[in-house]
Length: 215
Length: 215
DNA sequence: TGTACATCAGTGAACGCGCGTTCACTGATGTAC
DNA sequence: TGTACATCAGTGAACGCGCGTTCACTGATGTAC
Image 1 (cartoon, rainbow over the protein chains, first blue to last red):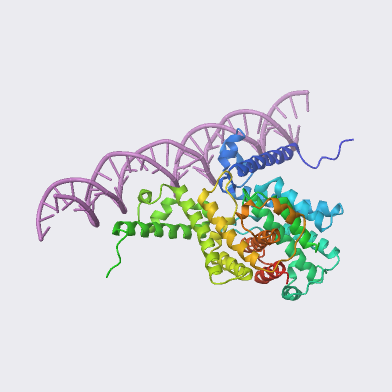
Image 2: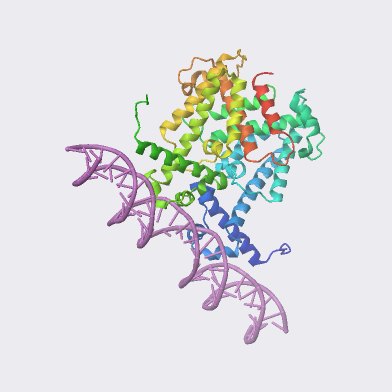
């Protein structure tokens, strides 16, 4: 017995072509960076005329926003999947690193140089908050590290970004350190700042994680 | 008695116009990002014709490379000046933060999303090494933190990036943590990832510095 | 001090390019009776 | 099952734009005698 059809063939075709356009967009970004992304070039690569893409996206800006959204989405999905599989904070760290190395340009679409004046749509901000919630949960599940500095005190009264999460301030602090430290290593690594230095960035990453966990 | 003239008026004029071109370039980068930098737009803003700029730069690429070089140079100078004035590692951290906040786009020209395929000229790499040396000196001057993990062992045999610096591996380790952690906070802050979260990034920065110093 | 010449900053026209985007259209696919 | 119609994917021409860059030139500035 076939499943009840909730999508028409045309809808499925549209979704497929949209996905194909995005794939070519990612290839182009990987080759020359996001600022070089061009609708006409994508169309040419797909064997279509430029204007045809306007059936699928309102224009270049909408396509880029969609790619940014997908990048945030894939990060949040990776974290949720890892947490769902029982990963602790160390597991999330490796999830993050794997996600970053899997596609550096995707990473930079989330964390890279912002375009002055650009503001991401609200739904993207919400996806980012999902990611943060997973991290917060993992931090709250760890034995407390007893952090009690000025920043912990500050977080007591500046914690609305945690969305009502019941974790103590020390856990919020650790979540932010987790995020910023690992991002520090990853972004320097992916940007090539370690190139030619000769040490293994994976070991620096691991050392930063150890420090985070008080090991 | 006038100083002996080592530069001709023409040379001085050239240097001045070159500087003015760069200033307008920075303004344009601040307004729309480095990828939007255009020679013609700069010329128009200066009340000149486009081709006139070719008297001063070989082309767009040379101008951008020069801006990147200046960005690295200004960072290295800031660090050397701070160290020369007796700053310790904490002082260097504040120097870095001040330098970053002073001109976010300059920061991103150094640390931002790399253009695939672009490789900085060797002299720029050397300037970066200068900066690292200042950090290493400050780390070596601190009381040892006794770090002895796997990464410290790795650094024993992977320290050529330190350019023969006699500091122990633990100091090299701390230098890399200093660099990556502070960069982590600063780049998230400057990229606007903390926007709307409500806490004060300066306090997170200070907390990361404290952790670095074992406080 | 004056004249002849070389240097060089800057102009304006022109080149070819690729971009995003619009528009009126063709032709295939799907739908209704 | 067949016909009439609506939907919609995709085309090709065209628009205006700004880009980097070249080239032959004008005119001002500096230099040499």
